[in-house]
Length: 182
Image (cartoon, rainbow, N blue to C red; front, top):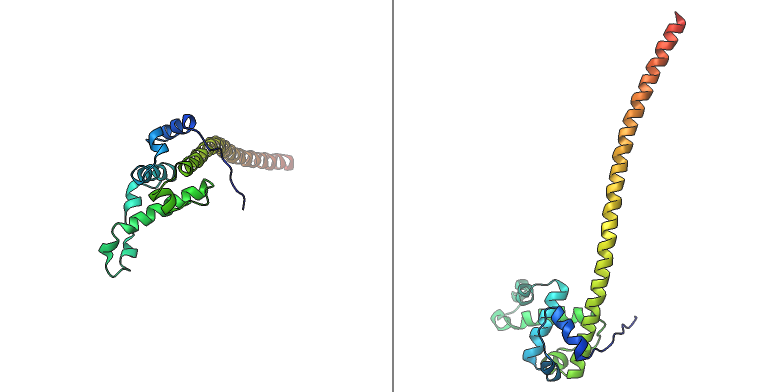
């Protein structure tokens, strides 16, 4: 399996990118991260980059809740587990293979946090670049589909006209044969 590489950004590059992704963090929070800072930060990144809504992240899986003898004990743990699952998927897509709940959420380390946020910024830029290319290709595809439809419609009109001309010609030949026979 290939390993992604990405530059670890400094504050001058990282903070504006976070702001552009609508995630609020400042240099002090980045230098001294805590659970209270990191949890909402990663939650917002998951929402922004995966398309999963906040409600979906916090919604317990009711079918899973039925499996527990005392489901009320898991009202908070299942949504928390769902969030971590979505976050882990995002981090794997960003090329971070060693992301951990304990080390990166509960007791965040400034260099690891900077590395993880740099990976996310790199992924977001890559995704944006590919999304623009995809949109251009999609527009070209739609234009070609429109051209194909127009050509098919013109072809159908031409076939009808050809059949009409062939019928006219056959009628003219029949008339000419009848006249010659007289």
